Amino acid sequence: MKIAPQVARAAAFALTLIAATPALADQLIENVEGVRIDENGEIDRFNALWIGDDGRIQQVLDRGDKRPRDVDYQFDGRGQVLIPGMIDAHLHVMGLGLAQLTLDLSETSSLDEALAEIARFAAENPARPWILGRGWNQEKWGLGRFPTAEELDRAVSDRPVYLTRVDGHAGWANTLAMEAAGITEASQPPAGGRVERLPGSQRPSGVFVDAAEELIAGAIPAPRPAERDLAFAEAQKLLHSVGITAVADMGTTIEDWQTYRRAGDRGALSLRIMSYAAGPDTMELIAGARPTPWLYEDRLRLNGVKLYLDGALGSRGAWLKQPYADDPGNTGLPLMQSAQFRNILVRAANGQFQPAIHAIGTAANAEALNAIHEIAESFPGDRRWRIEHAQIVDPADLPLFGDHGIIASMQPTHQTSDRTMAEARLGPARLSGAYAWNAILSAGGRLAFGSDAPVESPDPFPGLAAAFTRTDANGEPFGGWMPEQRVTREQALAGYTSNAAYAGFAEGRFGRLVRGERADFVLVDRDPLLASPSELRETRVLGTWVGGERVFGAE
Image (cartoon, rainbow, N blue to C red; front, side):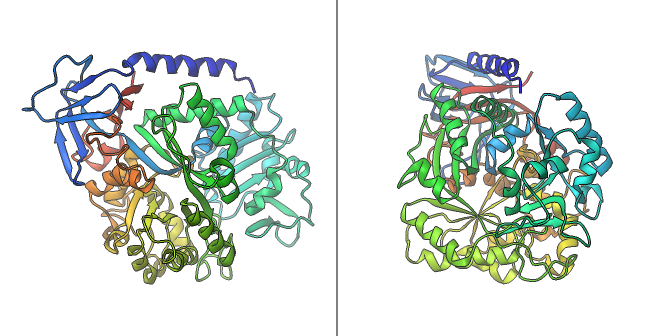
C-alpha cells in the first residue's frame, strides 16, 4: 500500500487546523447563539464563551454580561449556533479509519452491484495482496440468504478477498481466502461461531459468523504501524468534520492503543478517546491493575473492558430467549459461558475497571442484567455498569435497568436501519422491548447515544433526529415506529453530550460547556432544538474546537 502522499496530505491538513486558532491563548468566542446543558442538567442559551489559556471554560456569558478585558484572541461567531462538542458513546475508531482505506460496500443495494464494486476496487488496486472491505448487507440487497464464495470468485479470482458484514459480526470470503486460511469441509467453528455450509453438504459457503471469523483472521496480513497511523488520522478528521470531539472506543486492541499513544506523543491527538479494551487480557496488558490516568490533557484513558455476550440480529447471531421467527430452531449464538462471564465481571470490578457488555438479543440482555444484579451487591459505589446496544429486551427485564446505575449505551440509527429486519427476525408480537429508549429511562436507567461506526455513519445529527421521531430519513413510518419509545429533543442532545461523558466517567472534564470543563464545542448552521427532523439530518458543521483549539473548519 502506498501511503506517503496520503500521509503528506494528512499532515498538511493538521498544520492548517493548528494555524486556525491560537494555541494556549485567552479567548472570547463572541456573538453566537449558544445552546448548552448547564450545571443543573437544564438547557441554557447564551451568547459568548470566555476560554482560559488552559483550554477550559472560564465563564459562559449572556448578552448583558460584562465581557473580560484584554483577551488575547476574540472570535466573532457571526450569529451562528454553538453547541457542545458531540460525544459518540459507542464506535470503533480504528475500524472507522481502516474503512476509509479499504472497500466500502455499505451503499450497494444488490449482490450484482456489490460484485461490480468489488471488481472495480480490485482493478484499481492491483498491488494489494488481499482485497479487504466491509459494509455488505444481504438484507438490504433483498437476497434472502447469505452470499457465497463462488459468487465472490466471479468478481475477484486472482487473490484472496475478505469482506466484513455491515454489523461486523460476519465475514464473506472467496475461495482463495479460504484456501489461504486452510478452510476445508472438516473445519469446525470455535464456540460462539458458525460456518455457513452450502445446502446439502458440509462444504463451507464462504460466510463465517461471529467467532468463526477467527478461522480466516489469522491469514490476513495485519496493518503496519504507518498504515494504522494513517487510518487513525483519517478517522479523527472524519469525526471532527461531523462535530464529534470525544468517543468511547469499543474493543481497543494493544495495537490500537499504541496508535493513539503515538498520536498523543507527537501532538497529533485531538480526539478525546475513552477506551474499552478488547477483552480482560488486553485490559490488563494496556492498563495494569487499574484504569489508566487521563493522558494528553484529558484526551485518552483506558476506562474498562468490552465484553460480548452475543452476535448481531442481521446475521441471526443475537441470542434470543425464543427462536427466530424467520429461522425456527435457531436462538442465536451465546458467546460466553455464564460462569466465565461472571468471573470476568468480578475481575474487572476488583480493579475498578468499567465493563461495557455487548448484548443485543433478549437472552443476552437478561444475562447481562441478571449478572450485574448478582455481582453489584458485592461491589458498591459508583460502578456505572454499561450494556452496549440493549436492542431487544424482554419487557419483563426492562425494570432491571433502574437499579445499580446501569447505563444503556444505544444507537438511534440502528432502530431506523434495522426496523424491517427486526420485524422479520422476531415477528410483531415480540417487538415491545425493541430499541426501548423511553422505557429504559422510565425504569430509572440512563441513556448514552452513539453510532457504532463504521456500522452506521458517525454523523450524530441523523441520530438526534431518529431519537425523538423514530422515523428514518424518508420520514417512515409515518408517526414513528413504536412512537411511545421516543425521547425528547433535550434528552437526545444530552445522550450525545453530557450523558455520553458521564457514561465514560468524564463528567467535570468535558461534555457540558460549564466553568472548569474543557472548551469542546461546535458551530453549526442550524439550531438542533428548533430545526425540523429533515433539516436536522442535514446539519452542516462549520467548525469544531477541542480544548479551545480549532480542529476542523468547513471550506
